[in-house]
Amino acid sequence: MNHTRSPFAPFPRTQVDFPWQDLTTALVKQAGLHEGLWKVGFSFGLQAMNININKQHLPAALSFIEKVVLTRVEKIDPLVVDAAVVNPKKRIVLASALSPN
Image: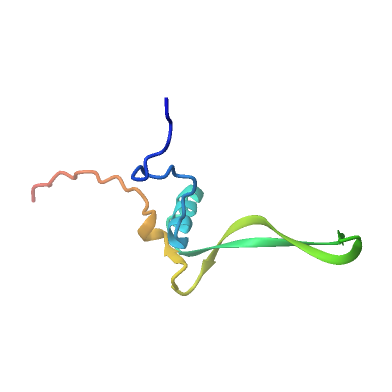
């Protein structure tokens, strides 16, 4: 049985990309934030080391992401989401009876 792939078949999905605002929105919801302007960012670490390239030892640095952070900001920009808009507080509205005068 021949298992060749048809040139018209869709490619299997191996990656999902997220726009910055979608990522920030998901994190704001996960954190349970309902007010304020928020921006996603990263906290980086830096490690110094010596590396061996072609039998020559060279000083080097390795940068890595330590954690993802949400930062509350004062001004809107393309990377900022408003928590009140993307994750509004749920309100319970109770019907009130009309009282006669």
